[in-house]
Structures are given as structure tokens and as C-alpha cells.
Image 1 (cartoon, rainbow, N blue to C red):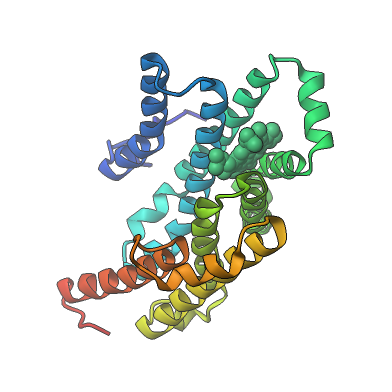
Image 2: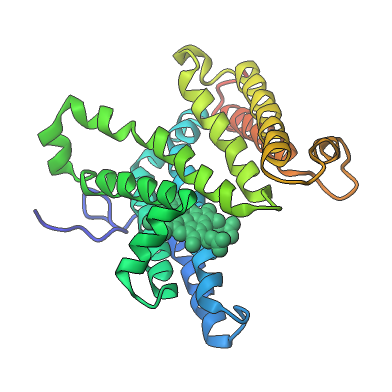
Length: 277
Ligand code: HEM
């Protein structure tokens, strides 16, 4: 099978959308390299890079899951063509993340294996990475044909792997779980959208209710996390969601983004002359 450059579409034409996705996937790497060269990654650049690569891996994974809902809600099916590229991008970032962890262990593989076996959060990350690797390997057209209907069933595994990777991030986030809470809220929205009955998946009322649910769900996860896994005042942190003096907290951002999406979908419909509903 001839390999096509990632910025070309199936017809072999250069595609602006694919170029933009490629730029998005590589920009954090360029910034990281620049920080490394400029010596601004702090006293332990490898550890810092391990964190950054992990963060980008999970962000791109959540973004991959967002492609289908965004394409449907915004009436923008061209986005669907980016799913594979973004998913493979998330896998590449997760692979780099593991590579840096191996570098942190001075490349001693038995020590890497021992660390993974001894620490629950690493074992969870490892399980997520193995699952993502299987999905990446079988993401080709050839595997799609070979597996037929089973391909879709296999690739639904991503809805288990993303929460697993997020749990890995939560456990290591310790006293500041803001990023993990934000992504958990988005993930709740994305998983909720998939279980909505098909006719509701584009209805503004249903999408706003889903956004509210994801916002409250994220606030609940945040409360439970701080209450059960830390000594921090979980109640006060939960109440801070009502206080916007220092800017919106992660759960509130989930609500804001969900509402903005509904507004954007409405504007696109109006621009396309299909009316606001
Ligand atoms: C073999 C697999 C993996 C290993 C060995 C691993 C290792 C690590 C390590 C050592 C840290 C930093 C912990 C600390 O300094 O206390 C970390 C953090 C993190 N990892 Fe992984 N990880 C793996 C898989 C994954 C996967 C598959 C993802 C996502 C798709 C991921 C996402 C993250 C995130 C988001 C963080 C938190 C970064 C931060 O907020 O600073 N990891 N991981």
C-alpha cells in the first residue's frame, strides 16, 4: 500500500484542514524543543518534558473523541477526516511520554518495568498506552477491511482507554487536579453525547442540558477527588466554583465551552440559512 503524506487527502490533494491539524499536533513539540535549547525547562528538563508530553497526549486523545460530536453538532463533516490523524498524534505523544520516562530511568529497562509493576498509576498508564497502541496499529484501511464489523467494536475501546489515561493523570496530579478535572468534564460531555438518542444529538436544548450535566459532573469529580485522595478542603474548593473573582474554575469552563458550542452551532445554521433551531 502506498503511503500518503499526512497533509494530503485521499485524492492526493494538499488539504488545509489536515495541515492545520498537523501543525496543532507538532506545535507543542517545537515549543518543548525550543524550551530545551533555551534552558527554560527548569532544573530537570527530562522530568518537565515527561509531564508536558503526558499532558499533550491526553489533550489530543480527548480532542480525537471530540471530532465526531463537533463535526455533527457544527454540521462540518470534513472534520471526520482528522480522526485518524489526531488519534495517531495522541499515541505518538504518549509514546514520547513513555520514551522520556525510560530516559528518566537512564534507559534501564528492568527498572522501567519494575516501576510500572510497583506503582498503580504507572500500571494504569501502561495499560492505557498498550490499548492505544493496538488501536493505532489497527487504524489502517487494511485492518478496517480485515476486521469488518469487529473494527468498530474494537475501536470503541477508546471510550475505556481515555478514562483510564485520565485516572493515571489524576493520581499523579496530587494537590492540583485542575487540568484533569477540566478534561474529565469534557470527557463526560463527549461520552454523554454518544449515549444521547440520535435526534437529540444536535438539539440546542439537549446540548445545553448535557453541558450543565458535564459541568456538575466535573465539579462532583473534583470534590470527590480532593475529599478522598488529598487532605485539602474539598468543600471550600467546590464552593470556589461559585466565585468567579479569580476567573472560572475547570468545571465552570466545561459549562462555558459547552454553551459556546451551542451558540456556534446556531450561528453556523443561521449563516447556512437553515434557521436557528
Ligand atoms: C507506560 C505508560 C506510561 C508511563 C510509564 C507514564 C509515566 C508518567 C510519569 C512518570 C508521570 C509523571 C509523574 C510524576 O512526576 O509524579 C506521568 C504523568 C502523566 N501522564 Fe503518563 N505515563 C504513561 C502513559 C500515559 C498515557 C497513555 C497518557 C495519556 C494518554 C499519560 C498521560 C499523563 C498525564 C496527563 C500526566 C500528568 C502530567 C502533568 O499534569 O504534569 N500517560 N506519566
